Length: 126
Image (tube, rainbow, N blue to C red; front, side, top):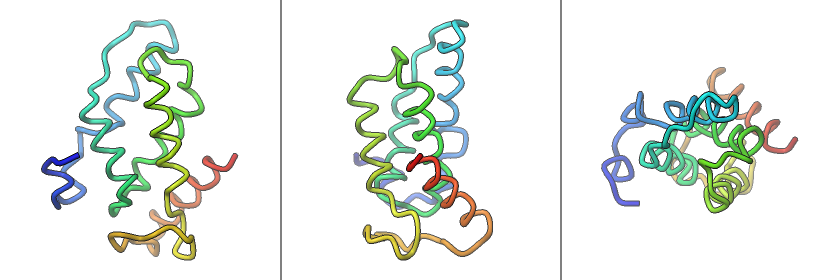
């Protein structure tokens, strides 16, 4: 996907325009309170962060893990969507000693990053 973000925009570029803006729409559908179309561009940008393992990707990954577990039956998510989220989770580098390639030198050391990596790994493998 060739867009501004994948060409080196900083991670703050997504604030307010990411998968978390779309998540409530899935919950509303699950509760039977309406069906609202997803903004696929916002989801794609967050997914790109995860699949490219850009710095702060671990902030977006929990949304995709939740989509896989809680919203699997949503009419808003296609089997192809779910498969791409699953592949992103499987290919994610959860720790420095994880054998997956670290393409962009992500931060693993601060407390907020450490807890997110650990929580994502726990959610993914449970």
